[in-house]
Length: 450
Ligand SMILES: Cc1cc2nc3c(=O)[nH]c(=O)nc-3n(C[C@H](O)[C@H](O)[C@H](O)COP(=O)(O)O)c2cc1C
Image 1 (cartoon, rainbow, N blue to C red):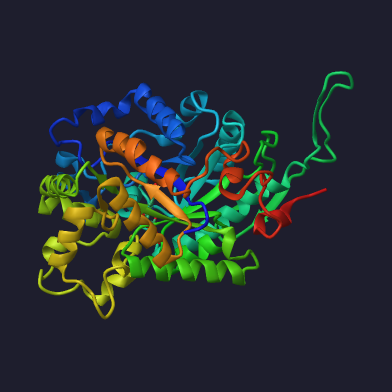
Image 2: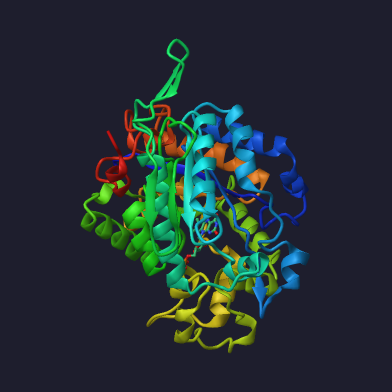
């Protein structure tokens, strides 16, 4: 590989799946602020481009109730609100990008735009929004007392949401509207602050985002959710996309997203495609394999099935283990990425899907072995798929440290990562110095005034 790759670190607002393995009890510190500020400091010191905290209101349900295994084993269950952690993490770092998820199904644009603009100020331009329609949708709908929206309607709502959000961010304040001029008593120029109007299929508004423009104006836009409408949403708005699947599925998703981005006039390089993956690295290959085995054995069949139900609403334990999941599942109103991934001519059986989820969860196979071997595998996958970087999910405090201490130096030695941050904002970190704002080819740019 000749070009530099993007490195994001991935964590949920809860504990990692391996929390119950011996020696990993410290993972349960997720309700301590120090846990998060320490993590942010470590990510920055290691030279990661950003830290992403996943978040969702959803949890695993079947037939209208929470799955007990989810509670007992903490499968996509206990979290804290990731958005609340951001300003604390910003206060102990200076260059690390910080990314959180907000679902367009659940939150409304005035709330989302005000939160991210505030965070963009507090982080001095280092914040990113991961746009999702949301995982665990069945649980989320129950929690909010709302019907589960049909899958493609959720994406139509997401499109409407992002359009209105962009109007608020880009369209309200002209770049020189904020004066803060004590001599003339002018806070802001009323001729340069505009009420935006929006009359969409899901949101209507006439209003002003009252918080003055922040360093990035619009936060760096990420997206996750690789169903067909998810890829279309990414190609329209996202500047970086999180993907997790097998090599061929990843290659197909990436070529589709980049092709659509080009068709949208944004160019193939406007969207960074980042592969989510786990590094299971040890001093010897044998030790890494043994570690992987231990992690796999810590996951029961029920745990794996609960995880799968969370993403898809499908109860694998009720299906014939020797057959693939039925094609009709492709029309599920839950998330589709993890259904579509296991359909088609070479579809695995239910037993194979359960085995895959026990070993690797939603992430695909780990990069496994010594640091050199794991980096070789990661580079091969990046080359096979045309991806632009990695979203790294360490599994425990221990593996975090191993990644920082062994894998990052190996990536650096091979010239694959930057030696120093580029610029001061997250967008510059991804696209280069000076690129603080959305590019002119982005659909948000057309809402700018003045
Ligand atoms: C690496 C990665 C991170 C994700 N992070 C989140 C998240 O934080 N919150 C969430 O609700 N969904 C997240 N998702 C997306 C969901 O898993 C799900 O695919 C999506 O919201 C539903 O869209 P779909 O029907 O296109 O699959 C993530 C996906 C990937 C691959």
